Image (cartoon, rainbow, N blue to C red; front, side, top):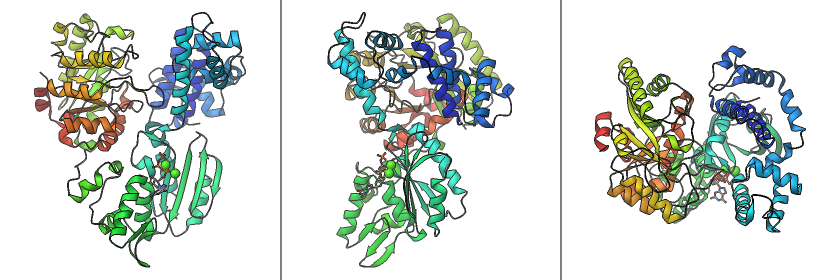
Length: 568
Ligand code: DGT
Ligand code: CA
Ligand code: CA
């Protein structure tokens, strides 16, 4: 029973409770518990006792007992009962974006609809529009939602797959016949979504490695099994491909299976121009192998320096490599702080001090505390009085900390008319203002563009957070003219955020690249709501690298004094 398994059960319980019209506080409790469990870095199955579990934010006595039951028995009595309830099958319908529990229940009660296919048929037949409170527009939105849901289901978010794949790699590393091992494919290139997981091993005993692979506890069923090539489906429903090659071919195979396909085709044709044959076994001149052990050798055979995996997309990296103009891609160690951090002053789960200590542990010199402004409906949004009070707390913690500074900031909502959720006289007093859209995602493109430019033009706004509002696999970006946003940011010396929260990665890789070309600076920030989230910065760094960003493109590589000069 992994943390993910436990979280999934809690999410399901919350959804069933929602359809049953249960008390929102009870529902929130399960969602919070699920969020805590899924982002906790240690496996709960290894926790010693309940008292330990209760120390986690959002986990009380009752939930702790449920976790214990799950870990010890692999089951939860209450959930087993729930799964048999009449409304349990309706969870599937809740996956359709824009379709809430009330409507799901209504559609079921009136039309007996239980599956997405039935829902689609009913919507296409105009059968939903006459239900109370639905109408033709909702019917259209449901159809759009079904389409979104189907598109998103095909690929997995990087943040979901990477930790699972890494855990598998570390298990295989323990097999003594494994010499080298690496992730390949889109996962090694750190694409934001992953089709399947590719793992490459070098060994002179391929069969033993393949056997160990198909017997991993994560495997649900074996799709194909051979000595050097196997595929499995995991219990989490994603596919994993393993290739085992001889050590002398490892570099060639790693290059081939890292891709992208488009990049591979270019490299291979450069080989052809030089009379070389390049494939997953090596580089050949006639029958003679002239390279293959390392990736460096492969690139060298076509006159190129090493190209980092994240930019192997045939998006110009080969031309840049030919001219010896590859970017010096940013690395996590270049970062000096995190500019978007929440605390328990609004919807975060850790105290200011705990957040600061954890950020300092990451090796940072500063962090910007950006709790929420009031209107987005988060309980306890910052009021002017609470900003005053919080400032005193920040000052207090700043006095205790050595070599680390907390900036007094806020994540301020951009209202639908482009005005900020705080008056200028409040914004003026803050060290840093991060502005973000959290409501009315369906505004037409030109309105949304104007709305965000309104924030960019506010003299007290410093950073635009998660500029497209998408949630990977769940919500498409809102419609906005990115070119216009970037031009406005450039003209007003404003910074765009690359939000590293694994659900967001917003700006995305191509947006980052465009921002860099236009000379717009980026802040890579985690949007952490708990100390455990700070490590998610790796997904931001990965996306930045895919966007060709170098340390000088990213403002939080700057020491504090230089950073502060950028703000007003
Ligand atoms: P994914 O799984 O859809 O997220 O994307 P990838 O890039 O991981 O693609 P996948 O798993 O189909 O194949 C892994 C790598 O193998 C791919 O990045 C490049 C290489 N590869 C696969 N098929 C071909 C091919 O037909 N030609 C060439 N040159 N390389 C290929
Ligand atoms: Ca793949
Ligand atoms: Ca594959």
